[in-house]
Image 1 (cartoon, rainbow, N blue to C red):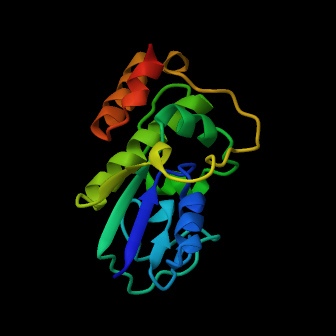
Image 2 (cartoon, helix red, strand yellow):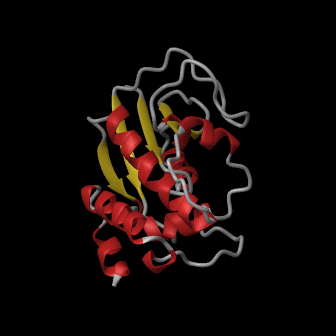
Image 3 (cartoon, rainbow, N blue to C red):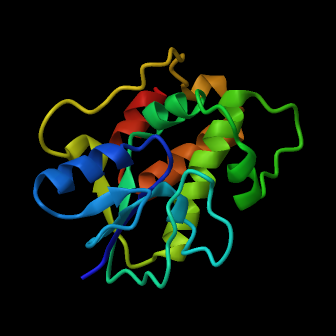
Length: 178
């Protein structure tokens, strides 16, 4: 059996890899292990070409089991604001924003687009909520970032986030919107 666990960046993929490895299942973070891989970079499918420079090679990988890891959107979007380089990400998505784009807007649109891309590329994937994972407290991004909320976004984009969150079963997202 070969397993792929994918997600939007900043959705605890490294933590999930560590959980599996602690249980003797070789799912490595951004590197193909004996049992599969945990990687957000494979969210829109197995690329035939370029992977980001930090990612290990993926050759002839055909997962038999795919899981879509989903983190609370507002926590994930907030953490995404600390990403240093968006070069590889921007090449993967067409970002249709035609207005002055703030960092929270870019991060929110990316969260929506990437999670939708995962559902298109892996429609059979089961959804796993990060907040429901076992064990120790989830890792926190040590970089300072402000918490992004719907009020930080244009109404249409906040609606896109909430609708996508609802489709992914993120009930906490609706309560955060109030």
